[in-house]
View 1 (cartoon, rainbow, N blue to C red):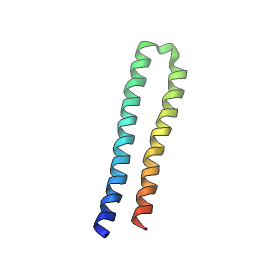
View 2 (tube, rainbow, N blue to C red):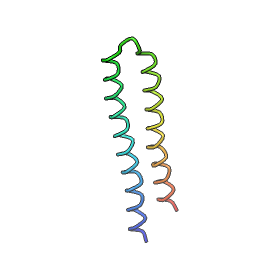
View 3 (cartoon, helix red, strand yellow):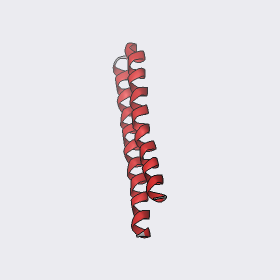
View 4 (spheres, helix red, strand yellow):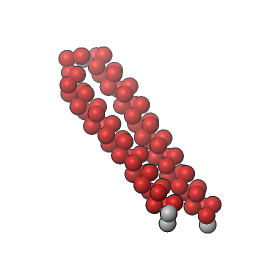
Length: 73
């Protein structure tokens, strides 16, 4: 049982981290593309970009919480 529990913890934090990292990388790329095309829209782009990063980061935090819950179950 302990081996499957450790596997579940590793998968939870690993997949959550990969998902958040991919989301943040794609958001950075698209934000810089948008700024390159339309520099005048920087305030709106910046606000939406930061909001998207916050949501992506919450995925990583939730996966960490789930991993901790699985670890000490």
